[in-house]
Image 1 (spheres, each protein chain N blue to C red):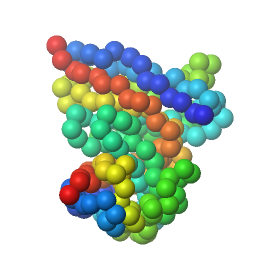
Image 2: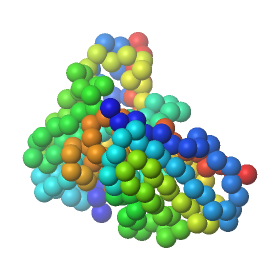
Image 3: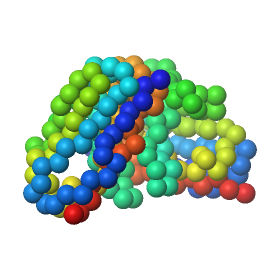
Image 4: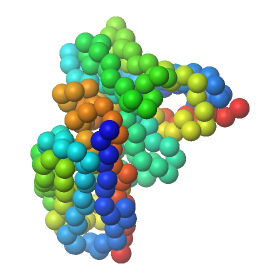
Length: 121
Length: 107
């Protein structure tokens, strides 16, 4: 059974960098699939942040591209998100997920439980 | 930039009702569309992919149809466990991927 678990600080100061890690169990990241990040501001809808293919190719939401970096660590079977220069608008529940698709924006079949990140001083 | 528009935003229905949610894309996305169900405080759950393919383990009362720019999610007989928010997602291009959501409420 594929399982994903997000981890990282729950509170980040404005202008700093948000960093999250997603640990994957039950499947080897290097074997295939996309691995992505999605966020959901409190009371609002879902927003795709970006995805990384098992080969290391990355795909980002154009609206966030200048601030986002997604990387993978196959030795630890985990992948990470960095979002720089955060503001209160980046406060959200952040989900990691496994994806399947053809052009870098996959659909997601397995999701982590989500972690709330609040941007505040 | 593809825009995904769901309708209605909120739907009130009773147990046993047939429910239909529509998702429209601003340009053709072929059949590259998925549907998710999300309950409060939980991660979304994949229901349908490639517009009409039922994800393993999802009850057969859920079905999807459409191609190009117009898609529907149908629940044939609404069950108590189905009251939730539903999202469509296009996976054809790098742009706004998700619709804004449709909340299915108890009538």
